[in-house]
Amino acid sequence: MKHYNPNNPFVVGKYISDSYFCDREKETEFLHKQVLNGRDVAIISPRRMGKSGLIQHFFNQPFIKNEYYVFFVDIYSTTSLAEFVYLLGKEIYEQLKPQKTIWKEKFFQIITSFRMGFKLDAMTGIPSFDIGLGDIHAPQSTLDEIFNYIEEADRPCIIAIDEFQQIGEYPEKNVEAVLRTLIQRCKKAQFIFSGSKRHMMSNMFNSPSKPFYQSVISMGLDPIPMDIYSNFAVRMFEQRGKSLDAETANAVWKMYDGYTWFVQMVMNELFSMTGKGSRCDETMVAEARDNIIHAQEDSYKDLLSQLAPRQKVVLQAIAKERKACNITSAKFINKYSLGSASSVQAAVKLLLKNDLITFEDGVYRVYDHFLSYWLVTVY
Image (tube, rainbow, N blue to C red):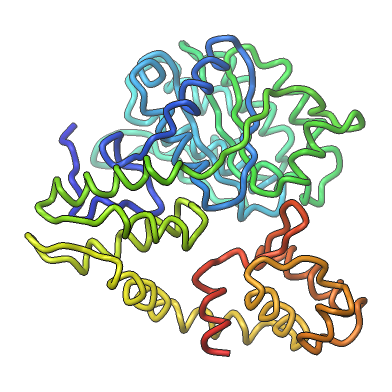
């Protein structure tokens, strides 16, 4: 396969190769150790810290991709077991489609509820996954079939389920118990569960009353150390005939507390602003940030238009604090004219549910750092 070299080495929102991935050596080795020893893993950390990138990086290591089938399913947007089953089945088939194995040929034979989606491409003769979400009529039965199929695999599998806490929101009863039973019986696969809502993930895996209690080895994900990221950023510029002050990379890292996605986004913009043979310095950071926010401004306005007035003022108050504590205290409420503590609590509940704010270690903050800055400067 031809190696792809992106024009901008600060890749955002996807994984390309080791060449554009920074660090996570200890975390990668940790995952490798757990897999070798037959342990499932739960990765728990805030969104945009790089969980998905780490898993894709781990899957891309030679000792994994040469010995295992790997599958990655992001269920953040799912709202039902049927959607979960659909995404899992589709991911398994799409990953196997290029493979020339007997196991691939068995896909529609074993997962019989997908047979209505079995069609041959008129040009290539290759079967296609031509099935819609509405075709999943008995999701639990289809899920049983998928796990039966996994047990027929001709090599071990690793299945990563991103934003796993979402299954706790499904309307169907006992989804956790059903999944736990199937996973316990599954000898051919190991699982990586990643999630961004710490309290929900911790409750799933650490509460004695929950089906997944003590079923995994848990790991957190901290920011990539600033000096390591700065060295990476400087090297990316140099490899493309540009230069970067380490102090500039440090300033960006500090601005976003090391949250990988936001740091990468600003570095991506800084790289695009720097000409070949030119130097990027700290004076360019504010313009890079403003460029990104300007591109998102219409979506931010649309977002605010959908919020109730009380949610808007609470969101703006948290943004102004940057890291807000004791938000139902009289001091906080009076400072921002928020009304009553009960109305603040009601607004916060909805803001948390819609992932507009996060709550970690007693601190509230606006999830999107760019939105937070826009709220403070524009409204």
